[in-house]
Amino acid sequence: MHRFAILSAAIAIAACAKTPTTATATFEPKSGTQVTGTATFDETNGSTTITVAVKSLTPGKKHAVAIHEHGDCSGANAAAVGDRIQPGGDHDAGLLGEITAGADGTGALKVSSGKLTVKPGDASVIGKSIVISSDPPNPGSLVTFGIISCGVIEAAK
Image 1 (cartoon, helix red, strand yellow):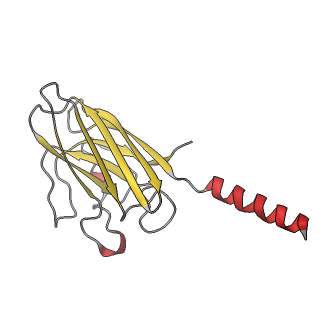
Image 2: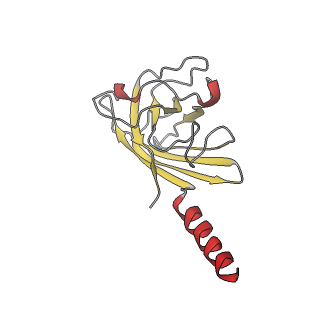
C-alpha cells in the first residue's frame, strides 16, 4: 500500500509538471512597421496575467491588443490569424485592452483575465496568436484591422 501511495504521488507530480502554466510570444513587425516586443502569460489560481512590452509604436497613439484563433502570423499583414478568440462564446474575451505609446514609441500592458488560460482547453492561449493593431480596441467585432505586430503563443520551456 505504501508503494502504491508513493507511485501515485510521483505520477501526479509528473502530470502537473507537463501542464503548462506559463507561455510566451515574440512580436514580429507586420504591415511595414518595425514594431517588436514580447508577451508573457502566467496562470495562477484560475487567473492568467498577460504582460506585453513593445517598441517602435507610433508615439501618443492608442493600439489594440488581442488574442486570435490561429497561431499563424504569416503574410505581410498577418491575415492568417483568423478572428479574435471567443471561449465559451464570450466575444470580448480575446480583447485584452489597449496600449498608448509613449513619446519614445514604447508601450506596455498588464492585465489579468479569468476567461483565458495557459492550460489546455477551450480558453487556452497556447497555439493562438497575439496581435497589436494600429487602432484602438473594437469591442463587439471579432476582426482586428491594421495588424502591425504579431506573435505566436507557445508554452514556456
